[in-house]
Amino acid sequence: SQDRIFNFAAGPATLPENVLKKAESELYIWRGSGMSVMEMSHRGKDFLSIIQKAESDLRTLLNISSDYAVLFLQGGATSQFAAIPLNLCKPDDTVDYMVTGSWSDKAFKEAQKYCKPNVIWSGKSEKYTNIPPFDALEQNPAAKYLHICANETIHGVEFKNYPTPENNDGILIADMSSNFCSKPVDVSKFGIIYAGAQKNVGPSGVTIVIIRKDLIGNAQGITPVMLDYKIHAENNSLYNTPPCYGIYMCGLVFEDLLEQGGLPEIEKKNMKKAEILYNTIDGSNGFYRCPVDKSVRSLMNVPFTLEKPDLEAEFIKKAAEEKMVQLKGHRSVGGIRASIYNAMPLAGVEKLVAFMKDFQARHG
Ligand code: PMP
View (cartoon, rainbow, N blue to C red):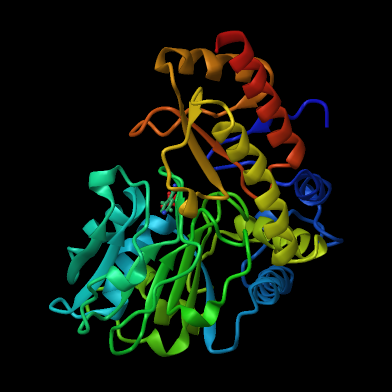
């Protein structure tokens, strides 16, 4: 609608307009229940129907088999950085981490408190602009799992395929916070997939964990109940009061993604948006520059710099005047970052590239 602006934020991020309107229409009274979703008992039949539908639609979208539990939790992806080693390891167990950016680095650092993680590869010396060939990885055969961040939100580095874990149980774990439901994923390749909702599938406050059921039930004794997968799985995410309204919103987004034709269709749209943006950067004769290796550029978060860094503040300000906001790069890396998640319409990216070309013509 006329009053909405294009929000390129990395998360919380833009949501689909029709989902917001649907939520608006149901906000005051949800489907004849006489109350809003925010007021309902989390154990009543209405909310149970909401969480069950959200789970079943997510299972359809990602083709998740019954070998996996789907949990709707709280505490952000950050809580999972601790929950994973606490649930899967004893304190002396070793685990492998690939560090491809700030988020996998944070996950690694948190794991140091609960087990013995190794960094088997780090992109730090190259400022996190690439992902190595997997056959060059020196995996530890005794590792309990191999952890990756499937899409580094700050650095814009995305795995296009996945390493095969060489540990005994073959467990691959992925933080998919910033590319969750942006493309089809073969869930059966993973032991755990986890994601905060606030980029692609809903508001902040909901953390989704998809976990192979045989990995549940071995948590360390010190594990807080709120981080124990067994407790949440046995109680269908209703051990304590879940983030009810957020789960409802995620459910509306899942419905919308299915209505759009599911994740293959979503991926096509995301590829198209990313392509026109990267083409504009690469076709600018160096006026704009994306440091990320072409083979691993993210479809979701597009970081770039200006040849003349002095112009970056002007770029951000002028873009905001034209109703394109939140284009400032993360404070740790600077520059510009355009996050173009599922809900960013093609029109938003088209407007951004038109602005970029115009800005270059005026300042180039
Ligand atoms: N992992 C990734 C890839 C992220 O982008 C973020 C948030 N930006 C996090 C983890 C942390 O998520 P949360 O704020 O939900 O704890």
